Picture 1 (tube, rainbow, N blue to C red):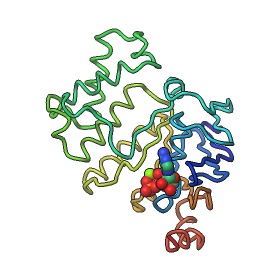
Picture 2 (picture 1 turned 60 degrees about the vertical axis):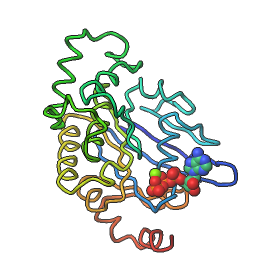
Picture 3 (picture 1 turned 180 degrees about the vertical axis):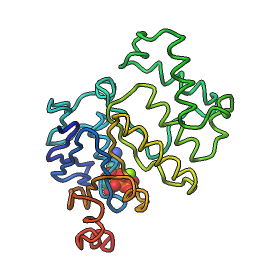
Amino acid sequence: MTLLEAVDISKSFGGIQALRACCVRVEEGEIVGLIGPNGSGKTSLFNVMTGYEKPDTGSVRLRDKPITGSSPRTVFGLGVGRTFQLTRIFPRLTVLENVHVAAQRPGFAAGLGRWSAAKERARVTELLDFVGLTRLQDMPAGTLSYGQKKLLEITSVLIAEPTVILLDEPAGGVNPTTITYLAGRIRELNGRGVTFLVVEHNMEFVMGLCNRVSVMHRGSTIADGPPAEIRRNPAVLDAYLGD
Ligand SMILES: Nc1ncnc2c1ncn2[C@@H]1O[C@H](COP(=O)(O)OP(=O)(O)OP(=O)(O)O)[C@@H](O)[C@H]1O
Ligand SMILES: [Mg+2]
């Protein structure tokens, strides 16, 4: 079943057309990669799919219901989590405090006050353990390594228990050990039923992790298929070499 879908999305910023009839589809249970050269529109598409930008034309559908133009809060409340290319954490708060702040975000059970304080504490503890940040939980988040900040941001998304998570360059600037660890965590979550759409320039990471890859070029999707097929698609190579 199609969980999340962007259909024929176009979006211009002034004279720049960031998205041109762009289509991306994520089936329930998949890990889909979204690749493409710099400026091809990947982040713009994420922004449209999560309510941060309104498309000029086209529609975004969640479980076949239109959510086009909905606010980020509404989209988030429907179980769509996302991270940002530039990590959004509170550097002066501790790791633990960051996740508790994230739990207050309106739109899901904890943020609507449906979780008791004890339940929230238990979930935060469990999640920090899951991402391996327990021993750093009392450190100011600003002192973490880049990769650890990315893990913390993902934790702050996971606390809402989203059904689908959009990751914008989770491995960018992260050391190889943490990248491997991160891929393992994503696989584990996927095994528990979480669906992923992942933007990433690290090809080894994308090709090893995703069961399907969509390729963007100049605002449009130019290819879509299993990693092995995408690797030998000449149009994909041209898109990268041409830019
Ligand atoms: N808010 C904005 N205002 C003006 N132009 C924008 C805005 N957001 C994106 N763009 C432009 O839209 C195009 C697509 O940018 P986008 O950030 O979506 O690409 P990307 O594929 O995420 O690139 P990268 O791999 O470098 O992150 C670029 O030309 C960019 O400059
Ligand atoms: Mg981007």
